[in-house]
Length: 112
Length: 115
Image (cartoon, rainbow over all chains, first blue to last red):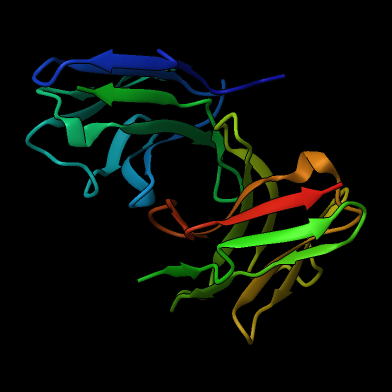
């Protein structure tokens, strides 16, 4: 049963610290997405990769967020420095084609 | 720009009844897809069903069916014979089939199934 995995599942950190979230997409999937979910904004796209190349990161605050895919089995989302307003659940999703996107379990980030 | 509207913030339904969750969308694209996801209290996002804009038949997956009315730009989710485990948030989402394949989500509907 192939699944998207994300680590860590929970992260509590202090303002100003660096946060790194990791995602392992489903083997063979060529698209990877990072979403953020908050009560106020709902689900919003942060970044999107196809075949490891970044295609859209317009939803991401560029000054503090960065997203990379060092290889086909790993996607990372970094926040440096973190701020309390970054507290949210961060989801990674992967897919093959336009008719599927499978989500990981999410990373719940709390910045104090 | 694409937009998804879910007009029902919350719904309460008796167990075993059928329930329809509303979703309307706005897009100028001809080729697109519509998804429904379930988010239980555990927080995971569970894929339920997908409908392509050119699919002639309404999509069905077990107790889930998608009532796709293209002219009205609606893609309602129908759950037959609801169960207590169906209580969750439900999100409708849209994707462009060409170009940037990113999902745009609605605000969600919280469904509560009463015993």
